[in-house]
Length: 167
Image 1 (cartoon, rainbow, N blue to C red):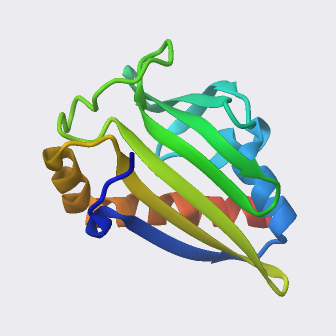
Image 2 (spheres, rainbow, N blue to C red; image 1 turned 180 degrees about the vertical axis):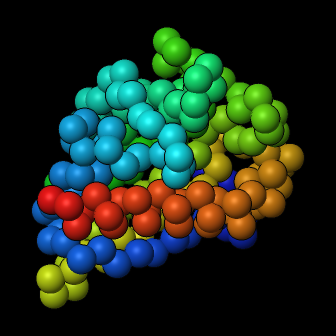
């Protein structure tokens, strides 16, 4: 069940100078995800990636010696070149969902819907995120985190744009 409070929803839209097919592939294929996914300044190790409905993307973000954090997508729906729907959250090394230690009231699960729309030789990406099965305090924490998420996703998508330009 998603949050009934639509003000909790986080939305970001970006236009990428790349064809939609390439954007979709770089957002789902392991060889690409390991090059750009995650906050600026970290490296990504893909533990497992199965980009099919019911599959997972389990990854480790490394921020320096001894500083690592795991995350996991559970893919819900993939419509090639058009849409990617997944539940995202923090995980342990084995892929089990865990609470984010630095913010224990952060939602354990967040539903993300990415839609990709062709715009000439560019692709418009629309990301919509909302807490799932969240308590009111988790929803409030998510809402309070919107500015930080804007910065984090903004930085990540800057790296992504550079990656796309290198292909």
